[in-house]
Structure formats: C-alpha cells, structure tokens
Length: 112
Image (cartoon, rainbow, N blue to C red; front, side, top):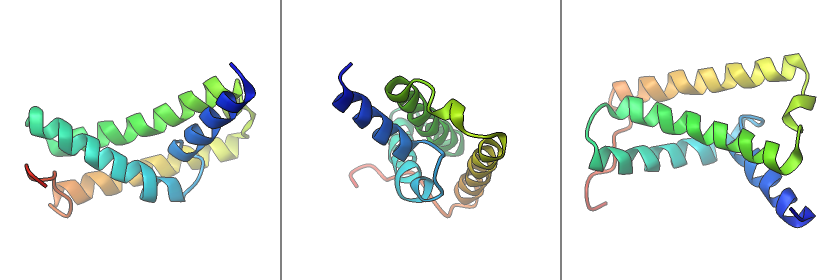
C-alpha cells in the first residue's frame, strides 16, 4: 500500500472513529441515520436497533480503517483516552436510542 492511500485510510478512519467528539454528531450519526433508514425501508423492524447497529458499525469501520492505514495507531492511545472513547460512544448510543424511542428521530419516509 502506498503512503498516500495509507494516509487517506487513516484520515477517513479517524473521521469515522470515536477519537473526536465532533465526528459522531456531524458524521457518524447522519451516516447511521441514512443507513438505518435505508435498511428499515427494505427490512421493516425496530428502527432503534437498526440505528444503533449502523452507528456502531461506523465507529468500528473507522477504527478498522485507521488500523489498516496506520498499523497500530489506535494501540498507542493511553488507557484514559480509550476509556473516554468508550464512554463517548456509550453516551451517544444512549442518546440515539432515546431519540429514536421517543420519536424525536424517525426513519426517512419513502420518497424523501
């Protein structure tokens, strides 16, 4: 893999990963919402579960892309940083579940 591709994977992975507070609000949640809405359209069921699975997948995809591009970049973080990442992902998961359960967010209607 050349350095340009490796750097691009690390940057894309970093944007998707739980390493920053802003990415979840502006990248992962909208991506998870769109993916869950699309999935829910074809496979009706629990939108809340679909939303949470898609949200977690965006974070996992980010970490994986960083790993592939950076070979160990995530492992360099200290335990405190790792704990903060886990807590942030958990907090956003609770927010998404509550917002979906209360009807604050719903799947996109067909044709939107």
